[in-house]
Amino acid sequence: MRKISLILSLLLLLSFFSLYSQWDSSITNDETLVTIQESASHQSTSHSLETNIISAHTEEKYNGIQNLLGLSGDEIIQKWGEPTRMDPSSYEYMWWIYKLNEHSYVQVGVLDNKVVTIYGTGDDVNIDPFYIGQPYEEIAKNFILSDQHSFKVGENTYRFELSEEEQHVRPLIQLGNVWVQLYVDQFTNRLSSIRFMDASTLIKQRPYELVYRGELINARDLSQEEWKAIELGSAQQIIDITNMIRKRHKVNDVKWHEPTSQVAFLHSMDMMKNGYFSHDSPTAGGLADRLEAGKIKYHLAGENIAAKYVDGIAAVEGWLNSEGHRETLLNNKFTHLGVGVYEKYYTQNFISTWEPKK
Image 1 (cartoon, one colour):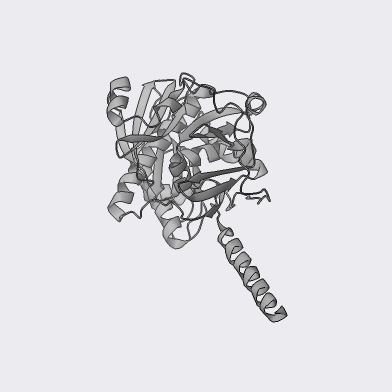
Image 2: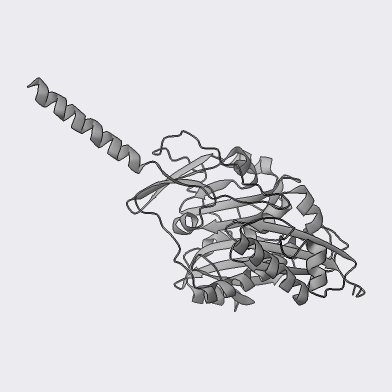
């Protein structure tokens, strides 16, 4: 009898370890900032997976652009008209770009004729209960900024874990069924831009460390032709958002410069294919060498690079929060910009040409 009891105990113990191992699946999204190769710090926490801390304002109603989530494409067109352009993304939805006025820039992500994510920046964008330029202290006073968020999609359970730095520069808030990712300018300590999304889109992007149980929601694999279209759209988004940020800081817009964008693209592709992250290419040299090879005429140039960010939006906000790259981004002497994107490698080449300012 004692032998049977011992066997049953061992079987129960083995079952426990089998169950525990299912909870131990984690995915870390490393973000490399510019200038030197660095990975964003991801500090794991030990909170229980069952805990679900959300905003105390979950049940309140707001009138911001997050209310567009779930609407059809036809309803968006009825509200705002045809978009300025449509850019594919690497997460299956199509970005509809709306430049409502010079102080309002919105990207609406549409998948299967349904809005699944929205990004906005500019003083005139209605992002109630937030606003662009809002002090971080005010946000922290009104909302719970947690270092972990747990939720279920179907039978699957997910937990995002935020490092201390992420809680400050990219906090995540849940408003009912809407997830809100805030991009905070750490130099002014004010809200720079905002992204709203549904749970499935958040899981596909995985902007923070993720622990999950069950099936992981993934975006489908992309062909080379699909990547080419995504890269072109991302480059245009990067210059759009760059100019919105420059305008906020009372700096002149930069104009698109196609020859320089080709130089930037080749550098992004070189970094991706040859497995390095640096301003200096082992084969093509530094920025001056690459601009000379591209026959670019300029009298001042600067470069920002980024890798492994979820998209161009996140890359620009990353540059804004890094001192040297922020200086390049906001340099009033630059007149033109070439952007080159290769998959999730991003290069900005700023130049000041000999052309007179208009």
